[in-house]
Amino acid sequence: MQEYVLTLSCPDKTGIVAAVTHFIAEHGGNILRSHQHGEAATQTFFMRAAIAANSINLDEENFNKEFQQVAKAFNMDWSIHNSQRKKRVVILASQQTHCLDDLLHRWQSHEIPCDIVAVISNHKNAQSLVNWHKIPYHAIEFTTGDNTIAFAKIDELIQSYQADVIVLARFMRILPAAFCQRYSGKIINIHHSFLPAFIGANPYQQAFDRGVKIIGATCHYVTEALDEGPIIEQGVAHINHSYTPEDIKRIGRDVEKVTLATGLRLHLNHQVIIHHNKTIVLE
Image 1 (cartoon, rainbow, N blue to C red):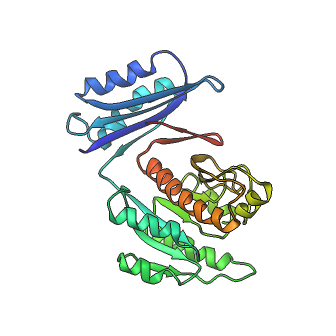
Image 2: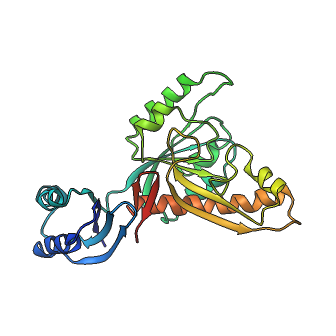
Image 3: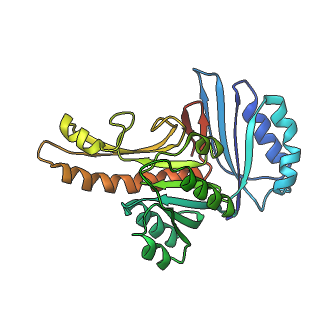
């Protein structure tokens, strides 16, 4: 069923839900699902409402025009989304392809509501896998020094594909600050650790060295600060002293795949609202 998904945040005050639902009802809209949250610490209100598209007498353009009055009255930051308009996703990957392979499988199985329009990598090892899915593959050469040119090529490709979302499927390169700023709120990363613990390149070895009993993975938005962006989803697995570093990596890879796919699905379904350096995830 086609839906219009309304998401909003604004200063918390009495009457927000009443005003929103009255507007929708006034235009014949049937609310299929609604979830809201008021955060006491910042006095901020968040809401997500899924509306049956065939019930409301407004298309997206007119909804945007007509809802402005309600939004202005409550100082809302808001948007309306058509569930049938799929986001265009570009995936960035490196040598480890388990997350890439998993996302491609879920996409092929229609588990992820998006169009994967390209895969970009700093290696050529996944080309046959991506070509099998009939998706364009671009291998960009990186060096050990300055990679300004390489990132400029990636940026150019992302713009040419008109990407709405960029997914780092274990893309083991640090993005330039300007790149992060340009695509703020649009870059999703999977970090192979239960952030904020064990940041950096080898967290599983760090976890082994500390003798932890739980390992995890963190799906988060990318910011200029390495591994410190707003967290969307986290997954965990229990381990014990008998597990080797190789066991931990194997189990961790499974957690990474599920956590990234879940985080991406939440983003594509417009369930995530960024609030300062955290997220509010609504049903």
